[in-house]
Image (cartoon, rainbow, N blue to C red; front, side, top):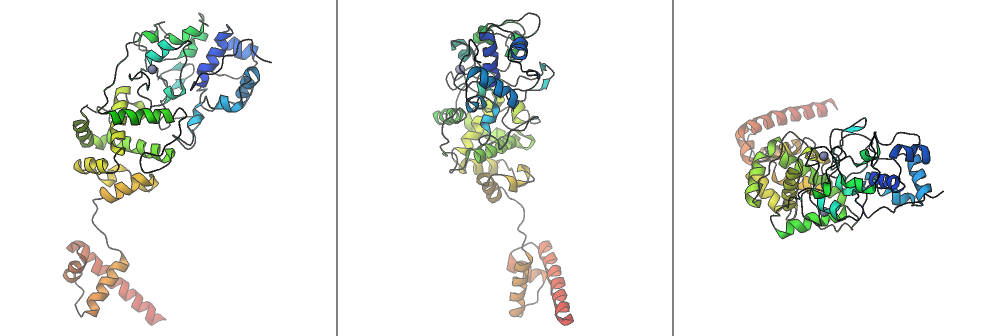
Length: 390
Ligand SMILES: [Zn+2]
Ligand SMILES: [Zn+2]
């Protein structure tokens, strides 16, 4: 069976936005439409329906709208699997995803942003999939900062609430209004952003295009995959915005001409839109001339390898190799075979193996050399004993 009115999803639309438009276009409130009319009995709106929607719901939507399963699937956040994250977890905080903080039907956090000018210019207002991402801080088209709250009452944007409760507004235009106070979000004052240079704008917008379906050009940095790139970038942003990053932030702020004011105890996804925009601009500025800018800034700020992470080996190679090569301030520790080779050379040259002679030959400090001599002697007597036992 086909619905009398079944609007096509718009380019880059979010599943929940399309589902609300579907019900409103047929002039139904959400519960009546999905529960009574389409016969979907499980709860929809007290969970994050854009994240792994149940198969039965997708099947119903497919039957009633004639959209292909792939087209419907691509409206969900699973679209970013293999780009921003390997696999989208069912619940919980996820890198690059704005936290939704759903508690029953109330939402403590927005989880979605909007561009007032996009909503204003839409023939029929709708919400974009990319607006759920912490990476999306600015509108590509209108160059203004994304908004997360109603400027009139500070409520998070929960557009499906129009189709619920005692007073229901089931016009599709309602998607433009704050569910709490009715303010027209399309009339919110846009805040223009200042890019440090044209290249920064082009990189950020290029990446936003990729999150909306453009091919991955592999331009940044050195031909890695999008997954590896975004994974590394997120680690880099954590380092810049985190507790140890103050000197890095100061150095970057001076170079880029804006102040990076991140809350050091908050993850990137929890930062304000302005802070995320500044952090991202700085991070992309670093990777756009990789690794020169990174090495210079992090070196100058005295940011060491150990501050990056305890498990550096799990980082993507393009980042790992630069951190290991350039930010490692640990003293050189020679291996046992290296010590044995140096000591044997001294023995063959008829020089006594002492702290001074071994330290001088290997170019290591006396405390290390003393330990190396003790270890070498212990290893030698152990191997002598093994040979005499044999
Ligand atoms: Zn816009
Ligand atoms: Zn409001």
